[in-house]
Length: 350
Image (cartoon, rainbow, N blue to C red; front, top):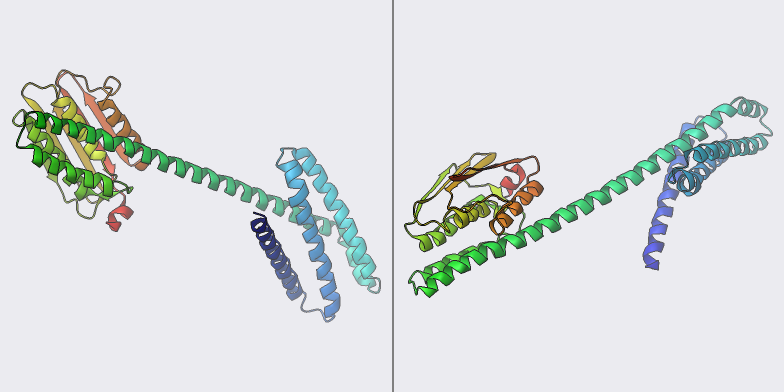
């Protein structure tokens, strides 16, 4: 730890040295027309030394003791005191140095106000730059914390979704095994494909839209094996999913919700109609199911509501200002309309 701190201090000192050396060389270059180089070098050395003194007093004392603490009146008062003292000290040192240059001494006395203004400007610029750097640092920390929090929340939400879908499918397999159905092996195969998608694909922020569609079809096949002819099912896809990406399990959650609440308690005549319209820059996902006597309203549905509340939060985090979700419910139908503006950068990566 001490070695790290010493290296940081060493880097800061090196940067400061290089800055003041560069300023000193620049001032020498501006005064290159004068013939007495030693006279010019000593003058600019004094100037740079006092500039460095102003900057260090401002950074080490005035800003932390008064400005940062909100004591602005004291900051202004002591700033003027520091500038007056340093200006007078500098003028006196230069006046003594110019002992054999009466014209320079006269000009020095004539330009006392100008020396004061320059020193004041240096103090003000130092304060402004330092305060801006503090603000930018705070904003960077806030952004990092916000990003970390969003990523953590997204991981938590995904961890909720996967077991939720898996739990429902395992229930279906259990029901088939109790009936000793020959369809059980096929269901297990479909489930393994879905688990592979969830385990290996859904850890990324985005997945290929084509793979999400395959997961939708697998889920429909799993449910179709269980419910057989009890449902009027339609799945329409318009447009090509190629070279497009989407946040994983967004569409699948809505589909699972419709099956769970639109078919679970249906005796006959259940209906689920799904439509996916894909364009170059967006997609529209619509799903509609008739109701089976159990309200699908999010606030009233304890198990299914978890999925819908979850996916709404994920949409807010992943597609802020780039999606529209509408959930409509009446006595007979439950409808979902989802518009997502696809991210061009993620589409190009696929």
